Length: 276
Image: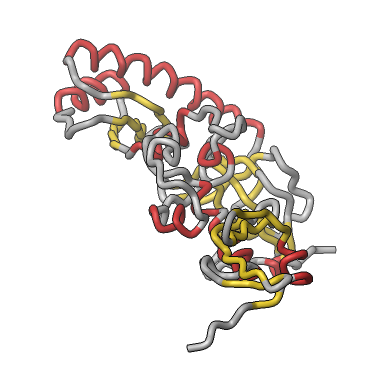
């Protein structure tokens, strides 16, 4: 009996690359399977990186493209051969860059499935005149060559590494969007504004400032404002700081200070309202 129930899954074109959602009626797809999809570069082989989920759980406003079908063994072999040949092409490109004395840092190369084009990604401090390089590559590789310069964040995503936390970089594992990372998020999270310590491998502000920000915004609602005053045993205490992780509040009073838990503050202290 034909299954008409619709699902959505996540696929990626390269390991560690951005994941995209596609629709399917095949509930038997597993993580690691290869499928054929229609991408902006034409027909492509992609790897499944999430199990099928009911379409009812799909929350994005973006329309889902449908997976064409499972990839055949022959198509998977072509895909893997393209990956190997792209590495060879990247090595050849590096030699030509050295001969032409171009200031480019090659990062990756990728053939389209039908090999009508190869996309080569690089990083550079300044604009590069690569017209001669494109002529040499096109003549040698017998296909259209597209060179694309990327920024420092995308470079860190491609290269990878370990963050200050000791774990692989977020951008290299699961984080795909870099918009909206500003110093205001550090202020919202009550961090010391030390730019070097708040910067990642790319030299930009840490990505975790973005995806942790909503937690801090919600958690702060439980705490009193800095400067709020409370009384206990007729002694006025002023909130000078608090730690949202361990839920501790610092109270200053004449002659000293003390640290109390947020629960104890709410239970043992009374809000002090000054007369105006």
